[in-house]
Length: 70
Picture 1 (spheres, rainbow, N blue to C red):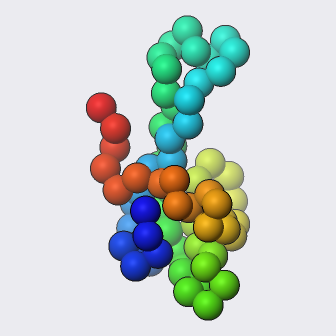
Picture 2 (tube, rainbow, N blue to C red):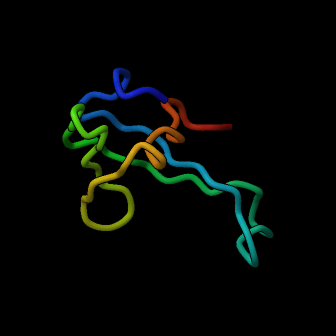
């Protein structure tokens, strides 16, 4: 994912591998992420995932996906 592909108001997906007891339900966990604001100067994204909105740095938002995995 690149910062230029993200736009405020977009819905993208955060995906991570399941671990522990959650792995019995499937290999992957997926969350919807709603992009609120983009700070291109500091390469940060203000988004809401599970709880309240917060700033995500490049290490986190670069792993997001545009389409929901199958």
